[in-house]
Amino acid sequence: MIDKDYMRKMTRYNRWQNENLYGAADGLSDAERKRDRGAFFGSIHGTLNHLLWGDRAWMSRFAGTPKVTVGIKDSTGLYPDWEELKRERMEFDRKIIDWAEGLDPQWLDGELTWFSGAMQRELTMPKWVLVTHFFNHQTHHRGQVHAMLTAAGAKPGDTDLCFMP
Image (cartoon, rainbow, N blue to C red; front, top):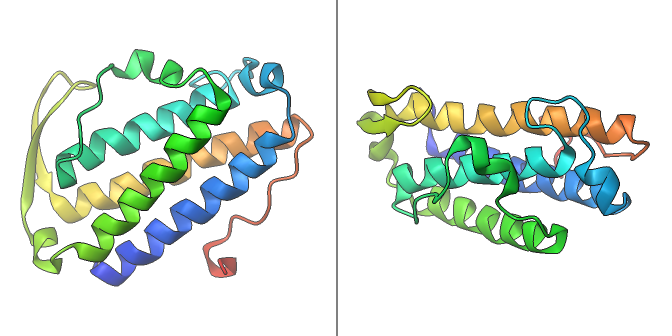
């Protein structure tokens, strides 16, 4: 079982790593960020869009934020403009942090039922498992972006949680 301290740590880690990757990606041209690199969501830009889309989908379930308006297949095109994507990412990271800071720890003890577009059915799971998945999903796709950035010649910083300032 996770607790509120874990959630606080992971929301700060999420912001730190997004700043890290977006900062490294800023050094690439728009064409390089959007170039298909063979990742599941194609490009650096597409994968970062999908990651924001996924965060929004889960936060709509966890915190009642607005639901995503496109499906997973269209998640890569959420924000075609790089500056807009960066701005939306940073604003949403603040919302995630605020949610975790204000969360009643007992909320984690419950279950959540939602309709999964990916599975095309209703699912019910413990909230703490879903929050753990939320952070794992972020880390998974940021790892893909880190690899693509490195292959493109960018130099993202450390990713180890123990090195977070």
